[in-house]
Amino acid sequence: MTLTDNGTSDGTGGSGGPAPAPEEVGAMYDRFGDLLAMVLGSSALHVGMYVPHGERTPVTSLLDLCDLAQDRQTEYLADILSAGLPPDARLLDIGCGTGGPAIRLAQRTGGRVTGITVSGSQLARCEERLSTAGLAGRVDFAYGNAMRLDHADDSFDAAWSIDCFPHLSDRPAGLREARRVLRPGGHLLMTEFTRRGTADRTEVDAFTRLWTSPPPTSFAKLSDEIEEAGFRVARVQNMTSNVALCGELMYALYNERRDEIEQRFGKEAVAHTDPLMKPFRTFCQHHVDYYLLLLSKPES
Image 1 (spheres, rainbow, N blue to C red):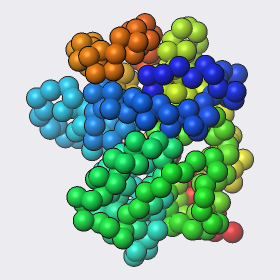
Image 2 (image 1 turned 180 degrees about the vertical axis):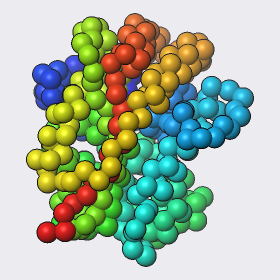
Image 3 (image 1 turned 120 degrees about the vertical axis):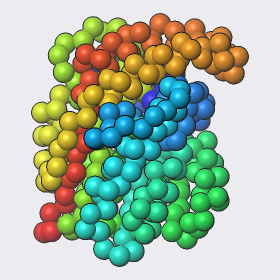
């Protein structure tokens, strides 16, 4: 996600809109990662599980709710991915953000986790978190492009990618690379946005500029790309209610903390962001679906 303009990208999204280069995504997180933490929550940088599965946990602020939801989402996904893993499994976190989910995955599974990101500031935060987690030797972080992974074939028992694939200018390349580095029988757990209905162009532009992404595609197109990449679908879960509420909370937190954001990031940042927040909120509410997908690489 971003608060910068990606209109200079040379790529194209699945529906003909602009798509960011990896360097643009990394530069956005370098510049505005801390701003995102002020409106999205700082536990991680992905959509949280605001709608829990059969339980309620009291919180005292909207930002507390964001952090709690992100932690719930991380733990829920870790439980899904960890089922059936071998002892000392090798795991890949594609788009690891600030490192919290990779560390939690290592703690949850006992495996060895490699996290990659295109953001230099995120890498620094990852190392800070790792230094206090006591997991040196079991978790490592590096710069990495999801569409061109720097790992050998069949390197990992499983991988996950939480809200990273929406950034990719070439999602099929990302899927092929994830399949390549997985061992036969390995799983990729990913989350992805898809688009429903016909949105106003202003709403689409607000989403792509705030998220530094190409426009979301249909679920049917996503399914075709998964099949063409050679994956089999083991599980699909519709989690759209979470992204709808995420958009509401981001809109509320931005307006609540706008003066603080302007003081920290300057008038230019808020002048750019102010006209985007309302159409972004509307697009999330009415046109964005959010899916969890567990994909498997065939044994042969």
